[in-house]
Length: 444
Ligand code: ATP
Image 1: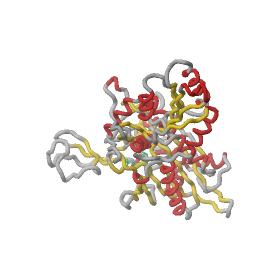
Image 2: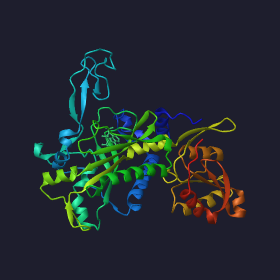
Image 3: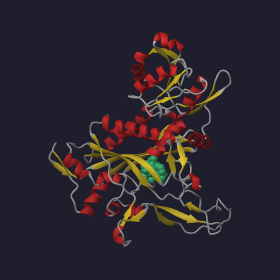
Image 4: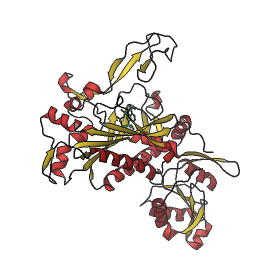
């Protein structure tokens, strides 16, 4: 029986081991903002690297971009965000609680105070944060913190076409911060006002969009499986006609079974020529593409894959979390991360901190740190040290013992099976590389 993963267990592990801390905690914290600690930032960076490699290196028709967070305010008029990017809100006149009108039943009593008939009429609340650029606060200087990274890609479509050798179909990928003034932020790092997205806009010839939409649905679900995520915790959810965003022709979410239930992880959207068409209209700059395969000129259609990076961190943590009851009844906490995303890849430890063993272990550390994220640990009983590595999800441990002096070999210990094998030091790095490449997840 797999252990139940609760949000409380994750929050507590994340704080205890330095994955995620509440923002400005010493002042009482800022609700819905979180900081990534020493292990959390490694995990987040590794997930980002995994996505970036998948999208750009493994697809030779996708290039990268890193656009600014602040953009010309007209961008957000053209994109529809000034007009449409809002949530309907209601307040309870009695207890002043605020709710998203689409999240509660307005015919029922207030969930907080239990009074009936106390809701205000729903009001639209725009989710974009605005600020002012320059010294004056006149309306001409207003800028928004981008609520999505996608528009930075659209406004650079022509720049990329003219400066690179890309030909349709091709994509532009970007990772970066986005900001939304979310009213209901709960569930740890699932929904926050400041978060990171990993988005890719794929430009195609009109008419081929349905085919590419299907292609990207398959690619994106298989990406999560490659990362070792339990396929039983992943599913597609199609948006019905009433749920489609203003730009979308079709949309599917990839959902993950989080501790609080099935929730969106990534959106795959067929956006037609809406975005480039609107930027053409609002900027007066042509956004067409000359297709030299048949000399036709058109505004490309777009398939978007839009994943949350910070939300992926929560997904990876929830999926990896395990409490395994061992034969002797002891329970070990283990994070079964894929080695490619684990914050530490190899724990290196001398059996004892004397008799020359630390020196040998330090030499091994020096060699392995060129290729892997390593952690050296010489304090405490070896079993305790293994447990500490299990709890932060380190897939491999290397132990130097007295025999090492004779046989020039070490013990390689696997996190998932706890199996131990003897490996010559000279072969260690290559062995770990091949273990990472061939890794398959086992579940308790
Ligand atoms: P919702 O309807 O839940 O507010 P959305 O459908 O508007 O979200 P998208 O605009 O499609 O979300 O964003 C793409 C991805 O960005 C989401 O699948 C999610 O992973 C991530 N994301 C969106 N909003 C947030 C947020 N407030 N905090 C963390 N991640 C977010």
